[in-house]
Amino acid sequence: MEQELLLKMEKISKAFPGVQALSEVDLEVYKGEILALVGENGAGKSTLMKILTGVFKKDEGKIIFKGKEIEARNPHHARQLGISMIYQEFSLVPNLDIATNIFLGNEPTRKFDIFDYERAKTEAERLLKMVGLGVSPDVLVEDLTVAQQQIVEVAKALASESELIIMDEPTSALSKEESERLFGIMKKLKEEGISIIFITHRLEEVFAVADRIVVLRDGRRVGELSCEETRISEVIRLMVGRDVRVVPRVEVSSDDVVLEVRNLSRLPMIKDVSFSLKKGEVLGIAGLVGAGRTEIMRALFGADLKTSGEIFIEGEKVEIQSPNDAVKMGIGLVPEDRKFQGLILIMAVYENISLPSLPFMFSNGIINFEKEYSLAESLVERLSIRTPSIFQAVNNLSGGNQQKVVLAKWLALKPKVLILDEPTRGIDVGSKAEIHHLIDELAKEGIGVILISSELPEILALSDRILVISKGRITKELKREEADQETIMQYAII
Ligand SMILES: Nc1ncnc2c1ncn2[C@@H]1O[C@H](COP(=O)(O)OP(=O)(O)OP(=O)(O)O)[C@@H](O)[C@H]1O
Ligand SMILES: [Mg+2]
Image (cartoon, rainbow, N blue to C red; front, side, top):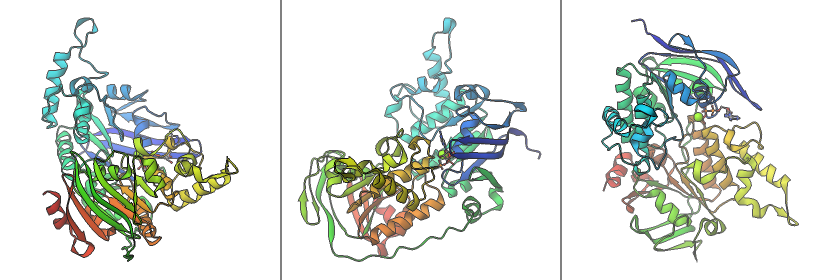
C-alpha cells in the first residue's frame, strides 16, 4: 500500500547565537502514522517542532504540508493550517473551564461575534467523549490532574480539526496507567487518519505506540528506523553514537546516621513518617504518583510547614521552618518541577548554579566572580550540560539540560543530604546513565541521597534501601536484596 505523504520538512536549518540547533534536517510524516522523534537532550527535537508550528523562524529549508508549501507565522496560524502542538509545558489557562480552553482562539460564534458558550459546551462534550475523558466541560482546568490536562490539550487539537498533532514529552509527568491511556487515545486518532509526532525519552513508549522512528543527533538527522524491524539498543546507539553501559552500584556501608526523621506529619496528607538515612546511603522512595512522596520531602525541606515531627541532622535536633533553614543545615532538594521550583529562567547558567552558594562566594565583601565562574564551569563539565557557555540564559537550554542545571546548583552547595525528586525525568538515555553514575559517586563521597522516582528499575538499580509510600505513610521498608518490582507494587497499593 502506497502511503500518503502529509508533511515533508526539507533541509531545515536553524542557528541560535553560539549553537547550530538544526542542520539540514529532513522529516516526513505520512497520513495516519505515529512518528517518534528521538534524540539526546539538546539534539534539536523541540526546535524542529517549534519551527513547524511557527514559534521559531527557520534559517533555511522548506516545509510542505498537504502538498503545499507553508510557513506558519505562529502556533495559532499553524493550528489553522491543521497542525497542533502539545507542549512540554502546558498552555491551558488554569482558571478557565475545559470548554472555554478547548475553544480559546477558535471560538464558535453566533451572529455579531459573540462567543457561543452553549455550543462550545456541547461540542466540548463530544470531543471529551472521543478522547475518553469523563469530566464535565464546565470543570475548571486547575481542578484537573496533569494527565487530564494533557487529554484536554488533545481535545483542543481535535477541536481545530488538526491533521497533525505534535506531542513533546507528553508522558513525562504521567503515571504508567495514565500514559497507557494516552497511548490508547493516540492509536484511536491514528485510526481516524490523524498523524502524530511523538517526542519522548522513554524508548519503551516508542515501541509501544510508534510506527517509525527518526533519530536526531547534534541537530542532524542520523537515521530512520521502523519499529517492527529494530530494537531499543539500536535506537540508543544511533542517538548517542556509542553504547551506553549501566554500571551497577557498589554499596557504601557506613553506620553514621546523617538524617533522622521522627513522626513527621503534615495533615491531612502525611501521617507519622519516621526513617533514618546513613552517610553514603541511597534511600529510594517508591510509590504511585500522588502517594505523598514529594509532600513528605517538601515537609522535611521546610517548603511546606509540617504539623508535627522532629528532624535530626548528625544526631542534633534541628528546626526547619523554611527551605533556607534546610539549606543551612546541609539539605538540598532537587525538585521535580524544574520550570517553577528550581530555576530563574532569564538568568545565566552560572548565576543559577551559584545562586544558593552565593553566601560562600564573597571575599572582602565582594563576590569572587572567578570562583563563581570556575564552580559553574566544573559542574557544567561534570554533568555534561550542553550550552554554548556558562553565560547563556537558562531559558535557551533544552528541557533536559535545564534539569541538569538544577542538579548542578545543588551539587555546588556540597550538601550532607541530597533529595532528588524524579532526577531523570525528561533526561535522555545517555545522560540518564551519567546521572546514575553521579548518584553513585555522591554516595561514595559520603552524601546521604534520598531518591524519589516513579521508574522502579531506576529505584531498584540505585537504592541501598527502599521505603514504599502509600497514602502519605510508609507501608514497607525493603533492603536492596528483598526488593523487586512486584513486592514494591504490592505495598504501593495498600
Ligand atoms: N531560544 C533559544 N535560544 C538559544 N538557543 C536555543 C534556544 N532554544 C533552543 N536552543 C538550543 O538549541 C539546541 C536544541 O534544543 P532543543 O530544545 O531543540 O533540544 P531537544 O532535542 O528538544 O532537547 P530535550 O530533550 O532536552 O528537550 C540546544 O543546544 C539548545 O540549547
Ligand atoms: Mg525538548
